[in-house]
Image (cartoon, rainbow, N blue to C red; front, side, top):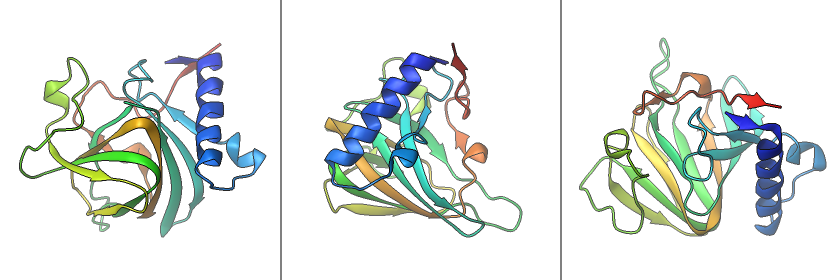
Length: 180
């Protein structure tokens, strides 16, 4: 849960980071940046700011902003009917992205948010700087964390059904509640 003031401040901050990264967005798009606290009410530690550029029945393109040290919680994109689930490629525009996927535990640069050891189970660390990218296959558990100064990245994917994403942390709620 976020106050309207917290939500709008995070929107402005994310829009400024997008502009600083050299990505041109309109004023209308800046006002559509989604601030996701994942129902955890600790946006600076666990959350994300997401601008959806396009979302059709076949593809989606987004800009994801993570503030310095902010973590987008561990999740995966499940099968939906005959669809195997979302396939996603992330590409860094500015900053350093710590991306965690299944594999050998080599968590070195990042950290698991305090008290959340059981909610972050994949610890194979990929460090991606500007121009770095990785593709996440459907059903692959993953989580993201920003390095110093935050990160701005593109997310290109097959159809996005974010509301259906599955999270390791049972306390996560995909829809942010705003209070006035």
